[in-house]
Amino acid sequence: MRISFSIGLAFLTVIGLTACGTQSVKVSIDSIVGTQDVPSKRYVWLSGMREVSPDDLHFQEFSRYFQAILQDRGYRKTTARDAAIAIYFSYGVSPGRTTQYTTTTPIYDWVGGDTIVYTETTKGEKGETTSTTRTITTPIRQRLIGLSVGTGQYTVFTRFARLTAKRYRPGESPKDMPTLWETRITSIGPSNDLRALMPVMAAAAAPFIASDTGEMKVVKMKKDDPRITAFKQRLRGNDK
Image (cartoon, rainbow, N blue to C red; front, side):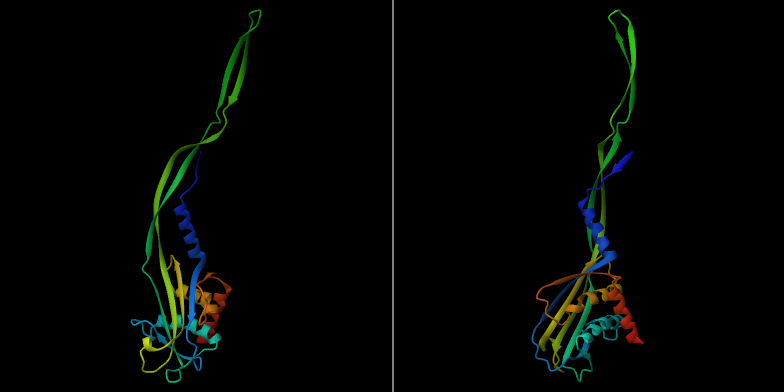
């Protein structure tokens, strides 16, 4: 009978990452507020990425999550002519980072449990012979018989979204407009599927967008969290 016990710390780490990836998402939010000299919360929504147009379907889908959050905070989307704020939205996912790991597994085997029968002969004072049969069972114990070494790898991605609010001044370059606030959202995990992850990231960041967190906040949220389900249903309703 053989039993194996895994003591590979790196392997346990990988299992933890995989579990987090499939069951929950860890989201970090860092939001900071600058000048607040804004006459209203009417904003124009713009792409913060040169290579991505506001007409891009993914851009439009991801934008709806954050525009709904801003609406709850009193912000109203409008045209550039009426806007006091320009909000630049950007997002992306990094190339995967692959890490190798090694596992060491001791191999144990059960030994013992054998039955030994033997006969013991003795002579008495008058020379008579007496035979006695005895039985001994050796105790069962485990013995280390070797080590099994294995290798593997796992890949993680950095997913991010960023909202930068500027004091809108038509005709000026974004870098010349005063920054009102900026919210950065990041998440590291085994998936690079932004369509699946963006609603999770948005829901986790919702309480902190357009506010000053004072430090980086970390939120863990399961993909089937009721808040995410309600969030998606709300947006589907708005699209009808």
